[in-house]
Amino acid sequence: MVKYKDWLIKVFIYLTLIVVLAIVFRIAYFIVKNGINELNIDFLLDNPKGMPLGTEGGIKNAILGSFALMAFAMIFSAILGVSCAMYNVIYCQSKAIHTIISLTVQCISSIPSIILGLFVYGFFIVSLNVPTSLLTASITLGLMVFAFVEIKIEKAIEDVDRQFIKDSHYLGVDNTYMSRKLILPLIKENIITTSILAGSYAIGATAPIMMTGVVYMADSPRSLLKPVMALPFHLHMLLSQAVKVEKAYATALVLIIILIILHVVSELIMRNIGGVIVEYFRAKKS
Image (tube, rainbow, N blue to C red; front, side):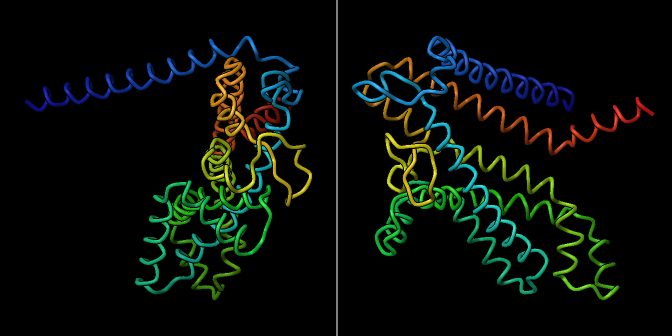
């Protein structure tokens, strides 16, 4: 009976894996099939043209704007997420406060991104008179991925050998020095990879940036207080016009390629593949 149950579980797992892979490959095939013909150097290095806008030209400024949004969102979420995680694990001595912080982070993670966009619009743009810009859009995306960063970094800190922390306390080392010299160096790969994954999540968001700093046509990002273009919003506008849909598929293909690259880079950093390759060639030379 036990073997029969184990067999059923294995069958269910393999069937689920096959279904998921089939769906993923079907989506990828559909996007590649419809967008590959429009994907070329001119499409990547030119700006939208034509009437309606985007029926000709390319997506250069949308790519640059997306990377700018991703970079500032990564910085903003990393500062908040790492600081909150460090406090909650290392500094916080009250179980009640620890529970409140954890509950708050969990609640933030479940807030719809459009609500975060509405908050930034109401607080920063309307109340503080900050112009709709790269800054406000980046803050929105940073808030959206903050909970992801905080939870992942908190888990990384908790996975650090507790004996290291105890030994530091026994030696009279304060929490600040221990955090800078022991904890942060041990989890630096986690911080980098988590930030990259958070950036890959942020770069594909559309709803929260529609009202906070992204426009259909803008110059390449040169100022934090100017609006920018972004790939997901450009894709949304192309599809809503229902004109030159092939360019929309090509835009989606570029976005997917960027996401794949970001995930591969994060995996390489996490597994220290670069360091392994360097050590391999050093060993061969010696």
